[in-house]
Length: 228
Image 1 (cartoon, helix red, strand yellow):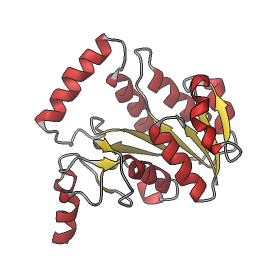
Image 2 (cartoon, rainbow, N blue to C red; image 1 turned 90 degrees about the vertical axis):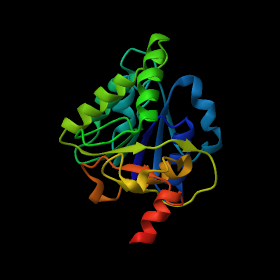
Image 3 (cartoon, helix red, strand yellow; image 1 turned 120 degrees about the vertical axis):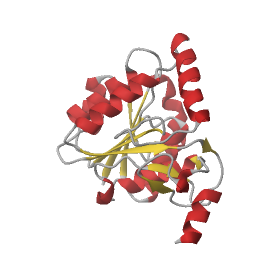
Image 4 (cartoon, one colour; image 1 turned 60 degrees about the horizontal axis):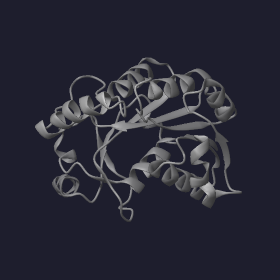
């Protein structure tokens, strides 16, 4: 399988590169020119396409011939970076390619998610402050996901909880809606978020799903498993 990883130089992206290589996939990584050095440990094992990920020509080149595309939706700045990246992938990924996008729990597909007051405050307060500082625009990620949900591609949108570093706990568990008891611990190892993204490439049950994930060894996930 030939896989393009958009945003390969970030922490999540590098974990996805490693998981993909572990599976014997051919990997094409896309990242900004100034971040290429972060991928030096994979030199000789992956192809790197430097450039802005919201540049349609960069994405067109990177996804050519790919069976799957993994996209880190990064809502940096206030110029629609995440939306531009996402639209380019939707426009240029080969027909039938598996498209897997990452985002946070604040994204909702059907309006049935139930959010804690802490998450609401974080999104509303942090989101506004970040946008005023012209650093992050969460609405950009919302629009990007809206376009994915409306597309007829073979997409999955993986919605991540709070993240932490640490050794892998295995494939995260997931549920359709934030607020479901299994997700109550709101914590996932970053390496396992990446694992879920890569695993989704060959899991057709996740096509047109927006799973909200959490670490499989968290208290809430273990309590759910004990009840079953």
